[in-house]
Length: 148
Image 1 (cartoon, rainbow, N blue to C red):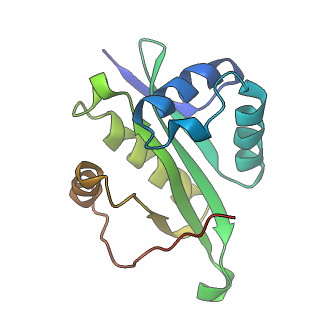
Image 2: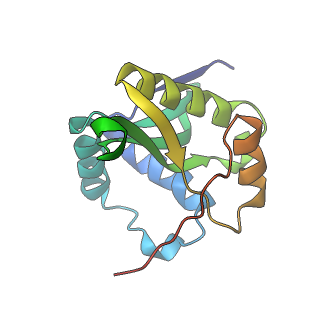
């Protein structure tokens, strides 16, 4: 089956949320059914030069990745792409979907003139860490988060 990666369409929000919920470590923090909230996030991401990308097989959403573009003060105000919400439906893992999402995200970042693409991954996701490393990502920093 052929794989297509492109920006999320409005009618695909619920399917994308379902994929995300299937891989989320904290599904209770999501609001399935509130498609408008998720769509607003996708629109704002696009307005800032990024995209919520979806991977489709046979027209069905099987993966997603949010690419956020931001200007850093460092690197002379250069642009950087941050990847978030990288999810592949469990029954499609190991079949190139995640790699295709990363390639599309990196292509978008290059198109926008980003000097770097970066991501964080929960410490519990050891399989994801191996996946990212296999695609050229290196654990060069340590991330910190504080809930507000």
